[in-house]
Structure formats: structure tokens, C-alpha cells
View 1 (cartoon, rainbow, N blue to C red):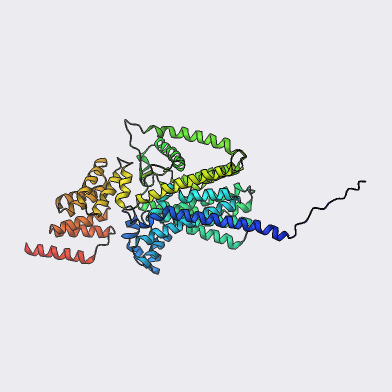
View 2: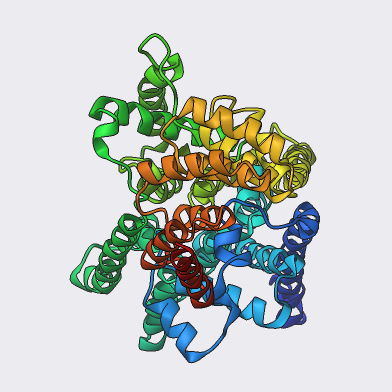
Length: 550
């Protein structure tokens, strides 16, 4: 036997004291990251607080929306039982009504609310990814990119896109509660999830993708597919289906769903592939952005080459992802998150007039930013790379994107700056010329308005909105005959355009053609323009005077 004395390892004098500093250090780091994200988000978007409302949906949602000017049981009931501009989002409309009650049309209030919700969303992204991975680097990178990416400026700086911010808030809150529920199941947490999910759907229909993300989370955490895990998702899928049907009815009510026959199945296939390529590319290089991306125009019976190359590019990306993601749940989760949440806006059904839109990336990009977070986390663990170099790269990307977003906020300063920017990139868009023409009308610059509206009508002769707006320009220039001609053409291409009947009535009134004015006023009222009864009565009196003179 050996006489060597075994020396007992020295116990730490105070185990609690040993552990406490590490925990405290982690807490400080966690809070520091949250504060940093909130600060860079505010600094990036603070310029938007000076912006005005634009003539792109802001009028219909806020400045000219009588429904938000009253906050009562009746007005709330009305919001929950009606569609608005092809959408069912009563919580979004309620948020506008609350703001109007306390600040009326103070634009700073509306922009401030948007920014505050975006900051909260950025923090929720951090919390969601942290609960999912317990990794600070992945969580911070994903959240920071979400917070300051230039493709997200549209959702934040555009007051009418409040619905994007609000549905995302409840969407992310639902995901966070789900992760807590899976670690510690309970009926209150489960009911809380359902309530938050319904709130998300009441803010915007795009929340319907959430049940698929819940399945992706289960896959990521390697949960067994059993009856319990399937059964707990059934209410989510049922609610999503119900709201999906409501969303389709809402879009159809505003005739926002275009005719499928406008483009062939092959063309739709090209558009879908092009959209995926563009969304991925703009996540990497978010430059040359626009508030409106019009559908492509054929030149010599063919589209630009990128449309035909897109399926091949997507196939190559798919193969690369398969090679990288084999047996890697993190990468598959990021790809799956992106595809599951972007799928419904890929213009398979022709909703709206744009082929892609910056705002559609608000939630989907979380999946791509998650992949970037994984990349930076891997870089941190490489012995060949100094951590300071990785920090410098990440900081540079954040600074570049933050500056770009800050500058892009200025584009949303007012209607004219917005459409000037669009037309600097979309030189053959009838919608963009029409909207800038409308902005010039609002600014009482009628000659410039007519120039733009002429261009719009030249590009699309049967465009009722442009014809109506040009009629309005001629009316203010007292060219009443031309105004009536344009209103009449607008009605020809859109017989349900109530405002055209209303303004043609006003033009006939100016010409003392009271019977024609009365006929149009009644048609406008029947179509929902809600013509002032005093105006109709004045027209009837005018008709009587003319008849008596005869």
C-alpha cells in the first residue's frame, strides 16, 4: 500500500457566493442586450415621428375615417361586425379610435404608437429566440436584424400598416407563452395562448400561419408526435381556418382579389419563384427598395430574364439548404419558419396590385435572421477567428442597416416624397403616377396633377381612379365639361365608384343642372357615400325652381 496521502480538493467556502456572480452576470448581459435593442430601434426610426400621413391608405384608415372619430359601444360593435378596405382587423381599427379620442389627428401620436409597438416586437423576438435556444448570440442577432432591417421600415413608418405591427405583437407573445407552456403545462397558459392568437387574427389575417410555426417548434425541440401534441394544436388550426375564410370574404368584398385568368398558371409559377428570390436577396442586400413593386410588363412577349431564372435559382438554393441542413434542426427550423410565414403572400392568389411588398417580410424574416444568428454563433466558436472580429462584423452590419433604415424613413415623410421615390424606380407604374397625381391635387398643384394623371391613363386607359382624380383636377381648375367627361369615364369602368357620382353631382350643381346633380347624388348615396340630406334637399329645391321657370 502506498503511504501517499490523498489530498481532498478544497471545497469552495461559499457555494452560493460562487454561483451568484455568474447568475448576476448573465442577468446583466440579458438586460443589457434588451436595452441595446430598444435603443438602436428608437434611434433608427426616431425620424419617422416627424412624418405626416400619406395618401396611401392613411386617409381611409385615419384622416378621412369617420368610424374612428367615435369611441363607444356602438362604434366598437360596428368595427367587430364589418370589413374595412378588404380586411377584417377590428383591434387595429380600435387602436386608431383610441388615439383619435385623445389626440385627434396629431400625426406624431400615430407614428409614436407604431414605433413603440415595433420596439416591443423586437424585444419579443429576442425573448422568443432565447426561450427556444437559450443562446444570447443567436437571440441578439435575430432580434437586432429584425429591429433595424430596411425592409421593415414600411411596416413601422406607414401608419396604415399598424395591422402588421399589432398582429405580430400578439403572434410573438403567443409563441413565447407556448414555449413556457411546453416547459410547464397548465390550462391558464393554454387559454392565454388561444386568446393571444385570436387577438393576432383580429389585428390582421396573416396570423393564420401561427399553428404551422407551433409544429415547427415541436420539431425543433424534438418532441414526439403523439395524440396529446396533436390534440392541443387542433383548436389553433380550427381558428386559423375560420379566420382564413373571413379574410378571403373580406378581400372579395373590396374586390382586392384579382382574376386568376389575368395571368396563366405558368406566369403565376414564375411570379411565385421570383418573389422568393427577391425576398431572400433583399434580406441580404436591402437596397433600391420601393413602397410599390408593380407586376412586370412583357417586352417582345417575354418578361425580364430574372423571372425565367428564378425557378433555377430557387432549386439551387434548395439543394444548398438540403446539404447544409441535413440532421441540423436549427437550420431546418429557420428555413421552415421563413417559408411557412411567407407562403400566403406569394401571389398564388392575385391579392392587391403588387408582386412583392416590403411589409410582407415583417414576420417571415425572423426565420432568415435566425439563420444569420446561427452563423455568427458558429463564427464565435471557431478557434481561427478572433471574437472581436466577429463583433466588428456584426456591429458593421447593424450600423449599415440602421443608417439605411433611418434614411428610408424620410421617404415616408409625405405623399409626394413617397411617390417620387417609387417613380424613381417604377417608371411605368400607372398606380404610382395616379397616387402622385392625387398627392398634387391635395397640395392644390392641379397642373402637375394632370401631368401625372395623363401618364397614368396613357399606361392604363381604363383606370377609374386616375380618371376620377383627373376629373377632380379639372373641377378645381373650373374646366367643368372635362371634369364631367372624366367622372363619366371613371363610372363606365367602375359603376360602383360612389365618389365619382358624388363629385359629378357637385359639378352638375356648379353648372346649375340640378336634375342631373340630384340623380347622381341619389346614386352616390345608394352606393354608400352617405350624402348630406341637406345637399339632396337643396338639389330638389333647385329642380323645383327650374321647373317653375319653365
